[in-house]
Amino acid sequence: MAEIISVRFKDVGKNYYFDPQGKTFNVSDKVIVETSRGVECGTVSIANREIPEEDLTSPLKPVLRLATAEDIRTVEENKEKEKAAFETCQKKIQEHGLKMKLVDVEYTFDRNKILFYFTADGRVDFRELVKDLAGVFRTRIELRQIGVRDESKKVGGLGICGRPFCCNTFLGDFQPVSIKMAKEQSLSLSPVKISGTCGRLMCCLKYEQEAYEHLLRVTPKNGAIVDTDEGRGTVIDFNLLTGMLTVSLEKKPDAAPIIVNRHSVKVIKDTQIKVDKKELEALKGIE
Image 1 (cartoon, rainbow, N blue to C red):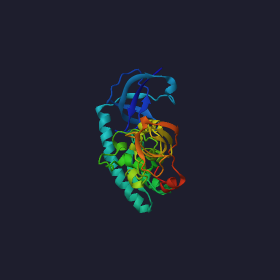
Image 2: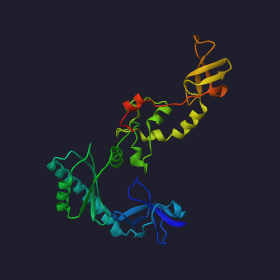
Image 3: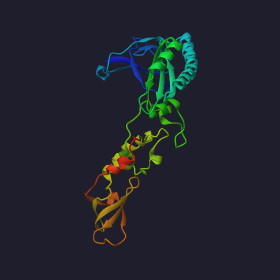
Image 4: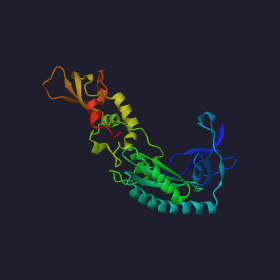
């Protein structure tokens, strides 16, 4: 077993494990840690605990110390410097005529590096821009291209539900979301209806997917052959949440279909919900 604490560097960010070096830390403590980017200041999200060593992907880096009042001041000063660096970089991008959108700027705690995050439609040759920025700030410069989901996470905003973005408020990591999830949840496959503000599939499609997967296992789908109290028929419509099926009877093909509960039928042959090629092509680019 290995003793760890978990640290976050953003209010809504990933959790990283560190070696507490035999010291005890509490949730919300500010700590100075060694990372692959250098020395950083983070917030303890999980206090001291032991986990199996096989759960660790690499050797733990150490917690250097509990953050002091001076360390906290340094963090605040860095935030002010980031605002100024953002404006400077914006001007340099315009001067170089680069087709890129600056999203965020981060100083490492020790100010040995400045990271500039940007979005762009394709590859951008920013070598001259890096030289300019290095000349201005006299430190290491890193430009990092990010996707539209990451941009939304950093910038924030309101979703179509009227609430702040999930990714910006509580989602530490993005979860895989697919067109198939939207279809299995009987949602309209219109990009406007199933896309978030970022233009990609809404993260919230993931929240109820487990429940829908269970309902799909116990509910006959369109095309399923079932036996009802009135005879054998074919399911032509179904409602996963209510469990009600619309069934066309074989012996009365021209009659109005009957509506029955899934619990009252015997499934002879079920079907699967699939996304066809035309649907995938129409929704290409929003996954």
